[in-house]
Image (tube, rainbow, N blue to C red; front, side, top):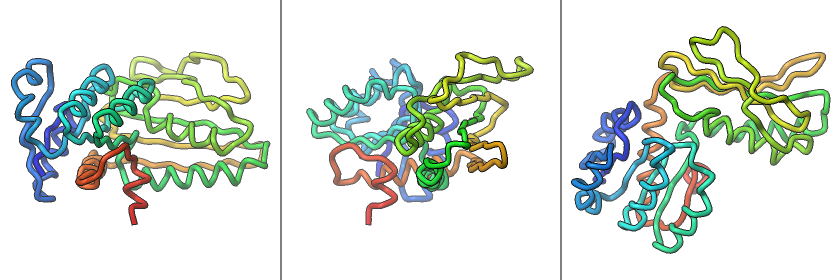
Length: 252
């Protein structure tokens, strides 16, 4: 496949490095408005676009690709408030969109475990749940899209939880996390840590007076995310509609 990269940060470079191992090539890189002007025609000739840009431009990137009839894989998070508009555009253009808050196969296995654990613990009200996520200092959104996905899955499976909130943000210049909002009993607190060059750590903790249960995923590098994005791009070939990692993992 001929790939267009939208965003050329660490994830863009990781995808560019891994693509040839799966017999793909990166033919276009768009990283700013000038690139859109000079590279748009080349983008139209690509088989797929992969977006790891910024929340502020992700929706515009998606719309441009849909209007150009270029399938797009989106790994950028922080834009989901616009999902309804994106869905309508995808339908209007008969487009192809694959989005995920996390493209790691291991993380998506953890998503499944997270849902199962939430269902099991639903009847045991002594357990209260919290989420912590750690990412590199360059990540712009907090909490991470992955942490939000974990929280939303718990909310869907656990009757006593109806919302999530950013409870604290810890950065290298802050000795301790500072509360952002109080923690209502029906809300899941998420702590976001921005530290060094950490690719991504997510942990869900259920705590009770007698014990603690936790599940945790720690990415060792960005290679797993890059591989997942390329698998998603391959999955889109010949398909129209909106897809997620559940579709990829259960395609058979």
